[in-house]
Length: 111
Length: 115
Image 1: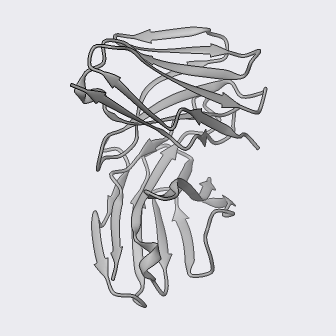
Image 2 (image 1 turned 120 degrees about the vertical axis):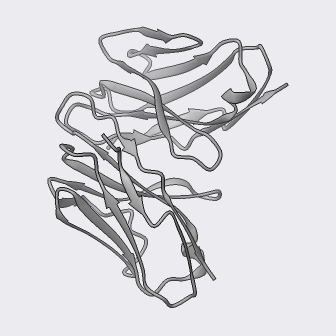
């Protein structure tokens, strides 16, 4: 089955700087890649996703890039704010299959 | 849509007691997932149902854990007997697998403390 890995496990950034989290996946047939954000004490929530027919997708300060050849995708957060502090999970799936989640990255934005 | 509904939101029980967690998936979704989250082990998939049928229960820790999905709108996760190491947040999630967008939507979770 699909195996998803995230790096780094913890990332600290100064407020206003950019944060980048990278995930790798193992199944070349995977075609759907969402990112979830989990704030302390809350549920994981979808923040952005990308499909394999697209290389990049942006939504305000967040963006996701996909490199199918290398089998990795990344979350980019620009102009980080304290409310961006959370655990971020990446996931991957092929059509008609369940998502496989990574173990999560703790992002800490230092004011 | 009300989203995924879980109950109870918090549960405190004593070791050896039976615990039942409940989940109502989003209407129209055909897949339901039970996860356990702890600081040490992160987010673990316990069991996955598709069209009310258990597909993958390899994450169920041991025989003390059981899960059922009697219909498309209800599922339970039962722990009997409970132990302190079962203390965790248990999330239920649902999705529409086969739609081309297998996004999972999580419920608010049940925070379980076994004393």
